[in-house]
Structures are given as C-alpha cells and as structure tokens.
Image (cartoon, rainbow over all chains, first blue to last red; front, side):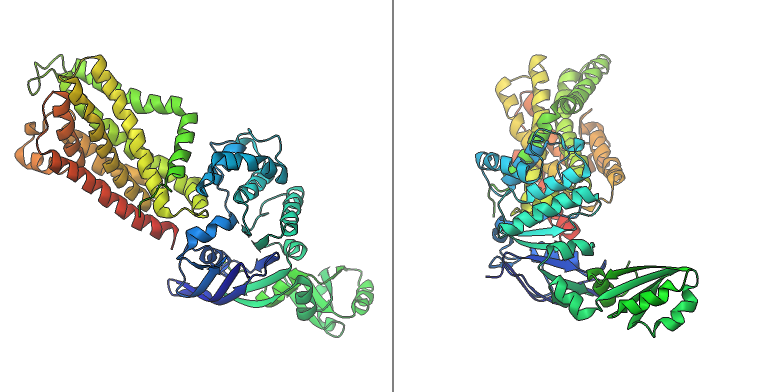
Length: 302
Length: 253
C-alpha cells in the first residue's frame, strides 16, 4: 500500500495556483525527493499532505486515511523534520524528546525507553542533559531528526533537512537517513541540494508551478533529459569562442560569465579548448543539477 | 469535542515554568503585593475608611482581581506569542496528532492555572494580615479567580492571534488593560465615578471580577453572582472562539 497518494491536488492563494493539479504516489520503503525552485509549491504540498491545510480540489490519502478529515489519526505514524528550527530552547535534549513524545499520547516510560536509541541514532549519546542552546547547528538538526522519530513513524517528511549545515554535519544527517531507508521507512525529502537528492533518493519528482513535471530515478532523469557530458567554460575570449562553439557541442547555455556546453563527445570540445590559452574549463559528467536547470530554467524565482 | 489531548501542551508550559519559577514568581507575585501594601498603608493612612472598611482591606480584592488579570494577560500575550511566533513551538506541535484547538486549549488552561497562582499569593497576604471578615468566604475567591483567569486568558489569546509583533500588545494594554485598572474598581468604588463613566465601567470584565471578589473579602455575599459569573465566562468564551478562528487563519491557511 502506498503511504501517500496525492491526486489532482489544487490549492490557490489570492488567485495564484500554488499547487495545480498535482499527482504524487510514494512507494513504501523508498526515499522520494521533491525538487523545485522556490515557489514551486513544495512546502504547500507537504502541508496539504500532512492535513494541516485543506485542498481546493483533489484528494490526499496519508497512510490510508483521507486528509484532512483523519489527520490526527494519520499523523500518529508520521514524523516531520520542519525547515525552521522549532526545538524548545528552555529544555534539555532529553526533555525535548520527552515532551514531543507526549504530543503523540505516548507514556513517559515508553518515551524514556526509546531515548537511548534516539540519542545513539542522532549521534547525541552523552548529550541527554545538555541544554539546547549549547548545541551546534548540526547537533540541533540531528536532534530535530531524532524528535521526528520519537513515535517510530512509517513515513517521514523532511523539509530541507541539511540547509545551513557544514559538510561534516550534512554527511552525518545523510548517514542517518540511509539507515532509516535501510529500516524500511518511507522518506519524502525536499531539498535545494541536487547532490543530496542524487545521493539519497530512489525516486525524484521535479515540481514547477504547482505540478510534477518529471519523475524518475536520478540516473533515469540524467540519461533521459540531458547529454552525458558537461564542459563549463569561462575566462577571457569566451565571447569570441562562443560563436564557433555550436559546431563542437550539441547544446550551449550561457549563465553570467560561464558557458555550459552539453555534449556526447567531450573530447572534441576539450581539444578545441586546449588551443585557447585565455579560457579555463571544467569537464565533468552531467548531474541532476543540469537536469534541474534545464527543466526549470536559470531565472531566479523570487 | 472536549478531551484531554490539550494536557501535554499544558504540561509542556508547566515544565518550562518550573525551570524558571524563581524570577517568574517574583515578577508575578511580588509586584502586586508591593502595590497593595504600598498604596494600602500609604494612601490608607490618609483615608478614614472606604466603603466602611480600612483602605487596605478594600484594596485587597481589587489587587487580587488585577493580579489575576495581569498574569493571564501576560501569559497569553508575551509568552504565548513567543511560543507561537518566535520559537515555532505551536507549529512543531501541529505536526503531531494534536490540533490547533487542543494547542489553544492547553494555552488557555495554562494561563488560567498560572493566574490562579497569583490569586493564591494575594490570598496568603489577605489571610496573614487578617484583611478578611470571614475565612470560609475567602475560599470562594478561588472560583472567582478561576473565572477571571479564564476570561482574560481567552481574550488575550484573541489579541495574540492578530498581533504582528510584541509592540502591538501595547495597544491592548493602553486601550483595554489600563482603563480597566483605573475604572474597574481596583483602587476606589465605582460609585465614586460620574454616572456615565460608572455605567461604562460596569461593562468591563475586570469590574465583574471585582464585584464578585470584594464582597467575599469583606464578608458579604456578592449580589448578582450569576450575572457577573456569566459575563466573565462570555468574555472569555467569545475571546477563545475568536482566538481559534483567527489563529487558524494565521497558521493553517
């Protein structure tokens, strides 16, 4: 059974359709990525899925319950890592977990029994009695993840879980998320980091203007939507070189001072570039970010 | 539907309060006591009697009602706003099975409980200084304080729901709370006011609270108990209903 089914979901604010006929169905035990530029409708979709707000049209089925009618029932088995830090600053690590567990109707003893596991999971063993204000940004984020697991959820929503973290902290969060996937949990992740989505997600849905425009595994999306190689070129003489570039590469895009050449045959481009001492270049395989930019454009959205 | 789902929210606030109880108690309790004793002895020394009793005895019930009002109001404005807007505590709770109504009920009952504590502190002073006439009747101050706390907690949550920032609360204090302190009968009997002003004052929630509390301290049975009680329930109930509607619009639209 799919843990979350969205059908024809529509939600407007002030005449603007933020979510516009969106369909999404999660496969159990998989990590799903929800990507999209700012304003594409990601956060509204999550709020609709959680039953926090009602849709103008369409249906939400969360863990078998119709939303928002049965939201309280469905959310007993859902965990949420929100975008904004909402830990209780007056509490210690343990008190945060204990208090949050009570919102699920759990008994104190039941939560206490789970705390050692949650602390170990989030790499906060030994920090049980630390006040929140003594934790680093990465630790707070991991505690937010641990808090979302207090009720042993089947489905976990993660809204930009690693925004603002340093690489060490991000890798720790990723390890945790992989472990959850290994346990058979279903994850729905929004992120602006394409490398994060490429690393973690089994299935990615790209949102734009309130609907899913493509869906597939990271590899499928890259193979299907973009040439396999990218050469990024910048430096003096780029404008002159650009004019003849089209004869070497399939597709070129300029963003600011950088020219992106998408090609099946990078050797020819690189050989040409070697003869241009003023130009610098970076040759790399195509990635999810290239797909994302191709599908949603390079213009700023906000 | 009323259930006990709000209790974890109440308990969360209680746990935080317990950690910071020292300064909180001092601010909530010492302040009204200083007012009462300072004005009671200072101003009381200049007055023969007010309403036939020493001024300090007269002032006691007003201080109790005013202290309950202040406590419930501060809790539902500044503290609740901090939880809702700054710390995002309510948003975190809304991701769990709890509903906004349950969160607001937890806040309502918490603010009421906290204001009850202010009442008890003033009652201890009333007992210690013998400012009452009949001890048993002073026990009826507890349900009066409960209704008063409920009334101002409900209204405070409605103000909280529409506030863009902390500064906004000054409007409420200047336009509602201060006039009530000055006109509601805390410091002098409303009969001292010109008739038109006394007529307006009679509608204020704090006036209803004091009309119930003062006779109880002075050993008399309050008149119009049902009217005053229902007025406090109505102000609080309408305030809470508005708070639920307006907070839903604010957080869940």
